[in-house]
Length: 389
Image: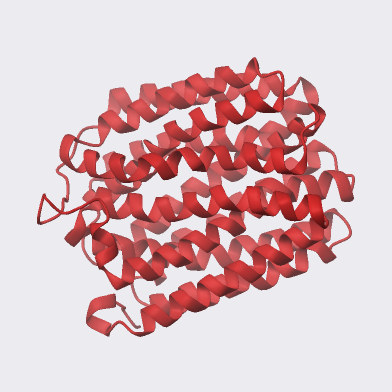
């Protein structure tokens, strides 16, 4: 493992993810001040992911051919531009547009960062290094809301947008100056289609898991702030503290990632996912900050077991189907879930109530986990690369 490249990569990732986490949780609340409906709130969140659905397949395969660094730096540049664009938004439609642009930048950054890490990860240590990566990624997303809540309360939402722009520019400079292009793991057959990774039953199972888990993530990022603000009456600082709990809870992925190299990965995906489902069902029953905080932490802990194990599966398959193509397929699944989720759940919110949003998300996640587990069970031990202790 090239540790210098790893630290530069995760450092720039932490900065950009913190910038994104700075404003994303508060966009639903900000949009409602502009008169946005539940459906429009969903579209604002979904726009980010819809862009990725259209670009991820091409970006991954192109990075396999032309290199990772140009896509990493280009993605950060677009993220910075989008951050400035939010400052001048005056109605929900403007927020939707700039979320599209932000999604374009993220689709050229996050999956390619994972592909870069896959390139430099030694065989047999996939879970370990992906666990470290995910811990840093979610720590950035968790630290962002705390900082964003403070900045928004003390100054304004526009000040948070400006801070996000500055963080993305800082990450861009670090990438340009300190990150080197590394040898890439590409598909054995260059003429394979963009969908080649789906030939793997493992990838198909993980795709279903990640897509439905993405819908659950959409319910958290979009509707937990609304639930906390509108139903429980929490301030933006308290909401920021709540969402920042993702940071310490996610650090456990540096440990669970190592477990994925020794334990049964299929069981980690299944039981981690089911833990998230049960906690999501409990969320509408909370009546204050502390109970909501406990349930939210339980949700993140469930994800901290399932996602590193799923990531490790994908790195294994990436050595056959191309690391960029495989990682972007993994991200595509998340983007589909994140894209469909806010719109569908926004419709549930408008027609029913906010509690029904979380129950609906739990049903979809449970269905995906069961189907993924059935597919992985049908794969033999040699194909799945499971490592039992």
